[in-house]
Image (tube, rainbow, N blue to C red; front, side, top):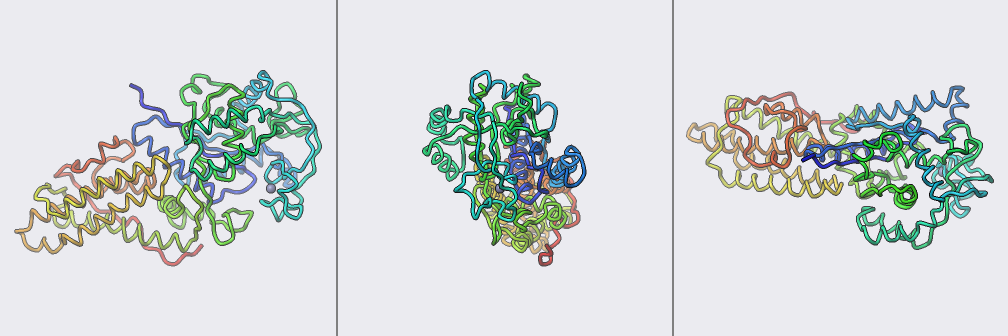
Amino acid sequence: MAAPKFYVTTAIAYVNDRPGLHHAYECTGADALARFHRQRGHDVFFLTGTDENAPRNEVAAKAQGISTRALVDQHAAEFKQMADTWDISYDRFIRTTDPDHVKGVQEFVRRWIANDDVYLATYEGLYCLGCEAFKEEGELVDGRCPIHPDNPEYIQRLKEENYFFRLSKYEQQLKNLYRDRPDFCVPEIRRNEVLGWLDRGLKDVSVSRRNLTWGIPFPDHPEHVVYVWFDALINYVTGVGFGTDEKKFERWWPCDVHVVGKDITRFHCIYWPAMLMAAGVELPRQVFAHGFLENTVGRLSRSSGNMIDPLAAAAEWGSDAIRYLVLREAPFEKDSPISAEQFNARFNADLANGLGNLVSRTLKMAETYCEGLVPRPGGDGASEIALHATASRAIEEHDAAAARLYFADALAAIFTLVDGANKHYQLTQPWKLAKDPANALAVAASLYAGLEALRIVAHALWPYMPNVADSICRQLGLPSPAAAPWPDVARWGLLEPGRRVHSSAPLFPRLEPAKL
Ligand SMILES: [Zn+2]
């Protein structure tokens, strides 16, 4: 029987800004989920990429005296570099300037036209060039966009003929969707916002812009381009073949989880399902809206001047460590304050003192007291039995939390086993036992349990810290956890006695106070 498929996406990054830590954070959560499913033998497709058709790119390119294409190429490369530096294991990095996306968007819009879901009308109102979105008069603060308070020039008064999408027609179907599928949008706090919008009623929305030369031409009406937000959403279907490769599309669609920021749930939980209904395409299974990284003055991004650069962060802490730190310090399901100091404290406590110490002491003791070979288990005492129980509970709790994208809880569960193994050594003290040859069985039992705990930790950590997990497995003489069949591999007692193990350089040298 074929393995179950799993299709996960991130939102695509708007290329006007440089990559921020919030982009890396979203990609890391989606990546952990993709790896979690791959490790369980599922056939996974992971899509991320860049949103490049905004009119503002043309303005920015003109100002720099380069072509719009050159500008978006340069910015897309920065996002790809960020994803690669953070070991984001995407199967496709889609760019909305890719020819198959352009073709797929036009096919998608043709279906709306065929379904009588678009009509021409005059739009008159305000538009923020920064958000590339229409604004209500009441949303502005002192005539400025609340998201772009430093850029009064972004607000334009527009009056133009646009194509409108009959969103209002889908109001009842959307209400039925949320009634019938309570987990369509999670966590619940986001779902409740969506229900509030539905209660207030839906108006038709403009889905084209007129007289722009950058963007995807509206089918049969090239004087219009598809409004960039709608073109961007359609990447989730074109990324797996919609409009160009029907076989591939059938293989992967519907998407299992769209991972998005909580600020764009209106687009993903109202517009996107309605757009799909109008095009006659099945709905995705779930939208997961993660929270924001915050510091004392708000969301971390370049425009607010409070950003930890994701490349600098990977260089400072290491790519595996920073992946751990963002997911551990900023629970995916809610907003979280973060700082470099907080990351350093967590690094020293969990990684240097916790995991790093467990790895180095376990392997060094195996070398010193067991000639570098996995000892034969047997004669387990209370501490070994307790550690085995801790391992079973940790895996159970981890799997339940990770499956619902509660990664901070998932990692906390794994670290109960790290802490449990370190406590096990404090209790059994193999370094003292080893002084008397009569204790050989007890030493072997203690170290076998420690090695086994470490093996299970490494396998559970692979979705979050793939390089560290590989390194621990190499030290245990085992292949990468990437290919190990879950959950069988998490069963206690699989480490074979007599296998050669060896210690390596420390995984996490302790950090000095934050430099960033
Ligand atoms: Zn704005």
